[in-house]
Length: 111
Image (cartoon, rainbow, N blue to C red; front, side, top):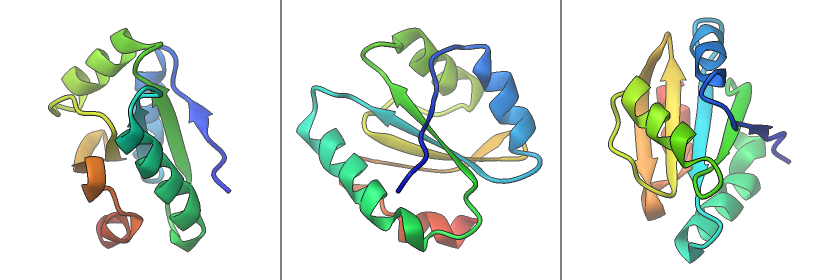
């Protein structure tokens, strides 16, 4: 089971950046109004136990925290999509996927 860390504040992005120098960090951007996003979230939860090396995964509800979602896109130089999974390493987004392309097996190759 995933121990989601809730991403609710722009201020948390500095903490995530710092953590990413110690270990890989994932951010999952989710829309509670989107069926594709619900499926992607369910797949992540089902596959989570198979990922070694991913210590933290942040959950960002883009409908409730649109300002944070915009800040994530700016800070990590990614185009906003939902659902979207970002891998942050050493302060940079080194991998991103969205919609039905979100698979933890792909993430494992980048850890």
